[in-house]
Image 1: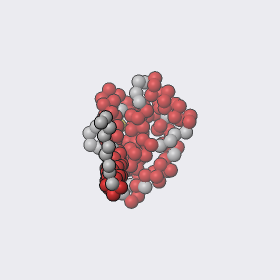
Image 2 (image 1 turned 135 degrees about the vertical axis):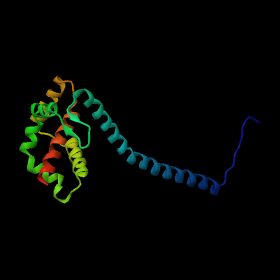
Image 3 (image 1 turned 60 degrees about the vertical axis):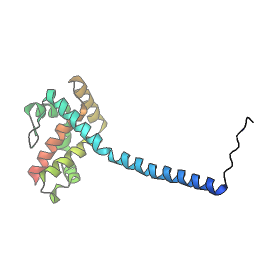
Amino acid sequence: MDTIVITISWEYFLGVMGALIGIAYYSNGRFTAVETDIGWLKEMISELSIKAENVSAKLFKNDSPVSLTSTGYHALARCGLRSFIDAHRRTLLSVLNTESLSDRYEIQRRAFSLLAELALDEPVARHLRSFAFSNGMSTTILRRAAAIYLRDLAVAQN
């Protein structure tokens, strides 16, 4: 009498397996939706870190609209991003596609996004990293300052 025998009919077994597969499918869809919705959280954390770093770097004023300080213009020129933007001005402005926009906030959002994800040429990227390291700041805040500069060029063009 040391054994226990459980008998399950094949209909019951298929029903349980079907229910488990249904639950797994449903939860997978829910987790995918959660992964997709996390993008806004990443963006918000990035914004907070840029604003926190700007407290000490003072590259731009967080007023509305965001504007570069004299320190910001100086850092932008020394890190090489200003000359990069000036050299690629036409291309960058066409990527922003500001002709169809009159909303300055949308122009700013596009400029921030473009410069955050822009792949730089290796010499420019190397100089940017070197400048950021020697001045104790991140490349992210320098890219934000460059995006503000690009936004100002785009708004002036419109």
